[in-house]
Image (cartoon, rainbow, N blue to C red):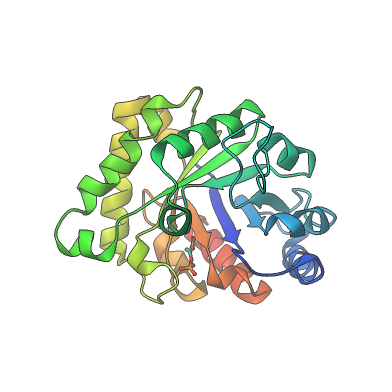
Length: 256
Ligand code: PEP
């Protein structure tokens, strides 16, 4: 049985004070409940220490939105995986479409970042997904296959527990438009089959594949209830405790 993961990507929102308040509010709403999955928040780097004081894995875990592809050295502005670990981070998002689009990050960088994350005992959430014109021109599966085969076969030590995938159709991110359950299930099953080819059937059966793209309390139950969807990567709706916990409630209802 795969445990669901509901992960909030705060993006470029919430400094230390507001971040601590939001993480506290989420923690208060969830504390004392028996959850059948995992809940994670990924603040901006500078907010991580403040959130770490209230999100220590019980019940809310702490993640980062990216990390350096390098271990240390003369890389101005970068933050290394071991520094994140020291700050209390357990998960690092890699390959988000905004990193692909605005920072021109490549498969080589994703592979190096995931290897650094794994080298320090952290878990990576690797994002992939097609653009609108790629879907409209019938190339969604081709793009997804290329994104997965460009990174997964070359990783040093991936397994079903240190790597989480997140299918995020770019046309659904921040647009209010959600993939239909049919599209989500079809791409998730296709992605799981790719993982089976690359890493083996056992890894594929146990690896969590999240859906991301305008997930909200009203659609979380249906999406996370799909056979190959194991949770959500949440942008906009992770910025309000009520909405984010509403998605966790949807996940609980989906597995319950
Ligand atoms: C995201 O950026 O990972 C995301 C899923 O955003 P939103 O939920 O706002 O569509």
